[in-house]
Image (cartoon, rainbow, N blue to C red; front, side, top):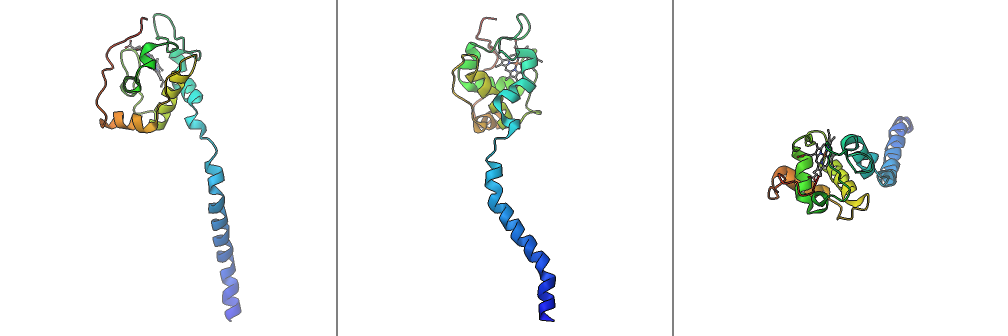
Length: 144
Ligand code: HEC
């Protein structure tokens, strides 16, 4: 009788062991980079239609981000423009997460010869929540 009870428990036991084994292996899976956060990809899917893959924009319509002083200056006002939009630029606050916005801005600050510091999701979160002071995003510094 006792042996039978033990036998009925076996499948459960095997499942438990399998679950533990899976948890042990989870970090290897989590270490793979999340394609949804790949800076080039986030830029291509959300920004390149206007600003172009080469960051040169379209003259008279979409400003170039390559060599753009506004993009290369402190990241706060760039984050603000992407969150809230400005002029013909749409808002992205409802469509992109802090991590995605950080990825897109990191792409525009580190591509096409641009060499400004990458942006962390925490910095985007602070501007989104109003924790950081509101930057002046109204001025267009570059000449386009
Ligand atoms: C529908 C077209 C469109 C899309 C999509 C778009 N932008 Fe823009 N963007 C614009 C326009 C138009 C302006 C100029 C706005 C103005 O004159 O105030 C602009 C301005 C900017 C500026 C300010 C440049 C400057 O010198 O002042 C930055 C930075 C920027 N966009 C980044 C991005 C990023 C990053 C994305 C993707 C997350 C993106 N944009 C998606 C149209 C777009």
